Length: 196
Image 1 (cartoon, rainbow, N blue to C red):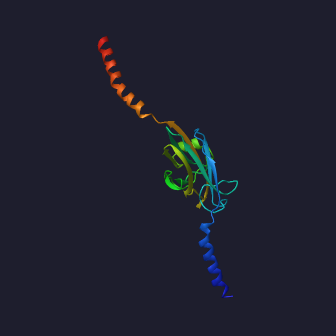
Image 2 (image 1 turned 60 degrees about the horizontal axis):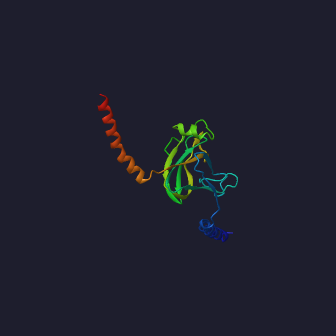
Image 3 (image 1 turned 135 degrees about the vertical axis):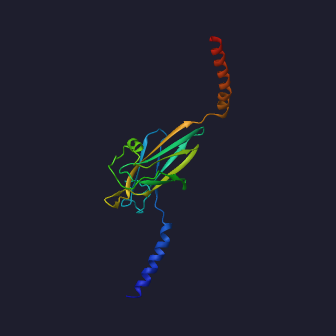
């Protein structure tokens, strides 16, 4: 029986070495640039990998969002915690770090559910606003800090994503505007002097 222990240990080590090679599929969803909220979830018990990344709650698979900002536009990505206050997140764009949501105390208070506008206005909920240039991106995230309820980290939450895009002023239009401002000031000055 003592000869089985080293074999089991060797098998466990070999299996652990191979686990990173077994990539679970990722569920991708489009994030519309319409200012509407999209939900993301974290649940260590439901996630197939047992981790704290965003998941699709129906499948337990990792969840990412496909984000597109058209040429000539700039995107404003807003991320906010929902459910219980106290969670914070790390975000990635194309596998590269994008940033973090704001630091908040981990103590869970009342739940706002999926009322992301209310969570955005409540300082107990973490949030982040990120600027995205024109392009197509894959957005992912993971839970950094879990809300704590009765001394236990929940390791499960819901959050909201919102993408808004706005046109970037053309350099020629901006130069024309800046050149016209002194002329407008001169015209106003002459008008005021003429009426005095």
